Image (cartoon, rainbow, N blue to C red):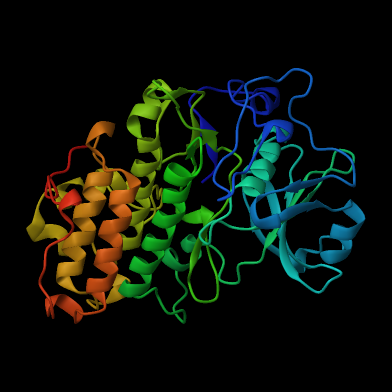
Length: 388
């Protein structure tokens, strides 16, 4: 699934997207904790640009996104050979490469005819240069030679979450229940950093299983920040913007009105939680009518505790703690509330998922519980309700 707009657009539309937000390196600042940067709204002179071979963007703790030449990255990927191709998305192709230093990296090359343009490229570079967290992918550098636009990331050896949830090969081991909860906790921590530690807060806007990358220990990192937006500050309650995101993950109020809030990300996170529980894609046209949209299909089960078990990924073959499942479904249902104000804030979700992870390790499969305590009170209220 790729990015979409609710109205048709040309390549120029995408390049000029989000005219109300610009992040300018000259005005960006990082405080002692590395949590603060400032954004502007001017696309005039002094606006967004990344040019020249010697430029570097410095983030917190001395982290530097360095500028590579196209020749360096071509050499790293052996001229972008198909054998080194490891992925493809709205931005373009992703290749595995080895830098001259010997470091293994992932190199993403902008498709000049694609739907994402220079604006998204610059936002990604600046966001990942200024924001650093164990659950955000590390940007090593970028290339702006001529019309070439490439991004260089740390290499995540296990690929994306969707690689391990959907269309699993018969000889491949499915993700265990405890690993799924571990991934949910890490992804939530990354989102908490964007919402609560960054100043001003950052709305991710493209949270989906394809953008959650995994290392060799299945530790998750959020990636793809080209659609990220600075959140509302002061008395503002939302950011008005053209609707962009991935079909199946967008919050209903954002899709209908273009009013973007931190709670829009919470809805998307709820969709990812549902994918982790069910092993189903948010949108799957290969399924029969009534089951193609995950949210629509899941509604009857989310409303009835007796049907929670019917949500679970059959690939787990019953190997999951029943109490842990009930708590996970309750958290998911709250994230998917139709009304944004009823969704929890991400910090409460992190607390609840961390609690769930700790309890999951104490439980035996299918409900034999060692300790039967209740989830954190911040998420207790309304845990059995779901409207959508």
